[in-house]
Image (cartoon, rainbow, N blue to C red; front, side, top):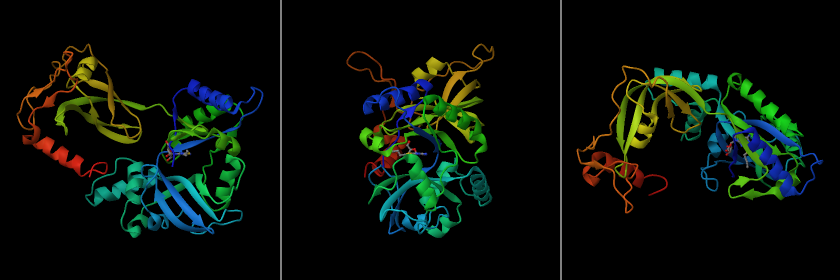
Length: 377
Ligand code: IVH
């Protein structure tokens, strides 16, 4: 399963359509229809049907190898066990996004809280947790939803355009997104984008951008892909969400290699529907650049699953500010010296590191975590 390249500005979208035209060798008169649809903030799911019957559900994983979630997929109301209608190829892999609605997420978290369990960070994490359940009966109680928007391996072609294909998915019993639309010019795409920005808060589920796709499937085939991105599609991302809050304290985290990372503990604030109470300050150069101090009001930004970042101090001229924050020169976990190493050219490492090695309990724990992680052991 591929991923999507990102566009952030109107110019990026214009560049995308120009690239498509150039690649296909089209004249400026020839119309290139492109579809626009919300980018659902969930998890991609692959569903294989043979003779119209669901035979396998798989997560995206690393794009090549995912997890087998067939039993769980069978419990999702939006996933038909048997395809309806006619015209489906003997074998077809349907792809789409598994997600949780905002209301269902709020209800799930209320139940988790009442049971004294840990809360989910956002609907996406709750949806991921639902797919990962060992017991399909537990998932069956989770209100997970699914929008179909693409397909993978097929035994025979079944449509000539993206629009026809999505209509077919709908006819076979899948939920498709009502905001899916086609446009012949960039202006229409950008209008669709602005319209979705406006509707975003009222949709009832999280979206983090708009996906544009070249409508003609023969053109999609000719355009192909570059590394893991198709040339025929792009995600126009929504701007990161921002909020203002206060830095209560700055804690120091010691990582696997002994690096000391300052973390701002914030007065909890909701940013794009998620309560944020920590933000990374990266290192002491970043603290100096921002001149952040304990007690400061700061603007923070959250983009998708990325750890929130501090953008700026709101009131740098305030008279009663705390003193500039100084990184400790002693590891807060083990008391060893924490130093910034100097390289051959006399340049100091941006990271200050604990020199304790394995006598540092934080390093021991982080190294062990790394050793048993998915990418290591
Ligand atoms: S199309 C080859 N359409 O976005 C392109 N993807 O950043 C296939 N996603 O892994 C994907 N909504 O999980 C497509 N309407 C949509 C989408 C969508 C969400 C996710 C998908 C993909 C990721 C890429």
